[in-house]
Image 1: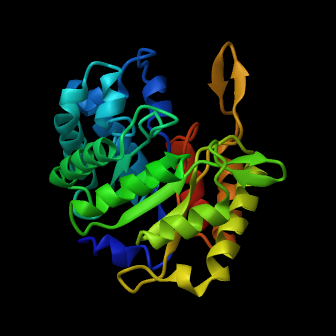
Image 2 (image 1 turned 90 degrees about the vertical axis):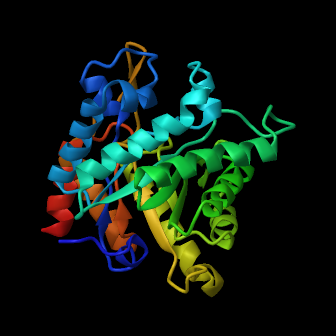
Length: 307
């Protein structure tokens, strides 16, 4: 079966993403502090096997191993000049695992710094770095770009602008929320209504949430809030391509517990799948897993949602 255009596919209903990459690398004995993204060059077979495991578990798409592959994040490992090679290789590895049937989303994460005056980033340099990454992922063969785990509106806005500047690929954008004062906000104080309004105005194909430090029950509550926010305004329901804006959710395997200075996620695949079913019932069709999730979590979710 040959895949249809991803922009059309995400309009057709349930679309399952993969789970965590870092969790799987740790399970395979990855050395702490190592640059995960450089494994696309150093150990491509490991990344390929993880992608294949998620497809076998029931994922319709996988995310490239490029969460920290912008030149600012790579600079912390002395690898800024390898950004293009790392991202292109990641796209090629995931594309090879996906074949003609499944989809590949180019994963773009935050820089780990802030724009001036809070941090050292300048808008033009930041846009160039994200555009460089997006272009390399496109050259690697991705079907769309997923910007995720963002906490600041100015950074995600520049990332979206950069992603859209390299071509007409679908762009999906996600922020990380915590529960604060009875409401959901990012680390930088962005609430759901503000995030949806700003992100959708930039012409994305999907908006949503991932990661964060909330429980499974709170992820369901957050999903309901996203859906009600989208439905509250007709203006936010149509993309620049005339299709409905879709909502995506990538919850962690619950709230982590600190064990021996390590974040441990104890949610079972069955409990994760039950929460995913509630998120889907709330009106969200693009669902995957973030920190702590594994092929077992995705398989349980796929069985429960796909039957």
